[in-house]
Length: 133
Image (tube, rainbow, N blue to C red; front, side, top):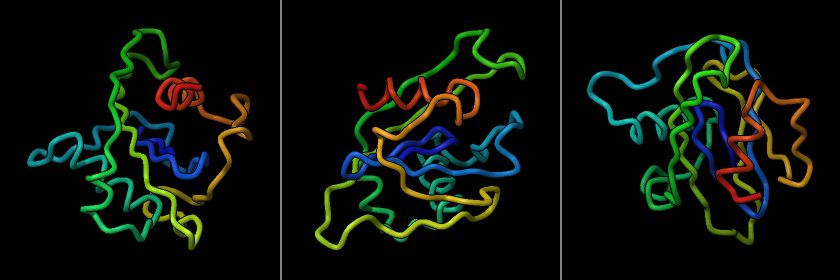
């Protein structure tokens, strides 16, 4: 599942896509007492209402990457710390997701169906780099 606070989770070659009203704003998502990884987990759960236990999410950490090209965003200088979490396949299927907090919608989308034209700025490039497509 991939995710715009630029946390990512993949599951069975699918990504979670969140569409919302607040994703175009430059904002600091980490609260002063949080690490960036803690903020990733919190935001992921808030925005997708993902019902995966927090210890499972933390144990699914795969990698992280900083996206810091000074010209990557029309919003001006934007730094993104992306996290990639990889959940184990489950015979029950994909965990349910639902838009919450700033996300109007959240849904699973097979990675093969990702379309750069339908994504905000460089988020397609972020996802493809993180999952190695």
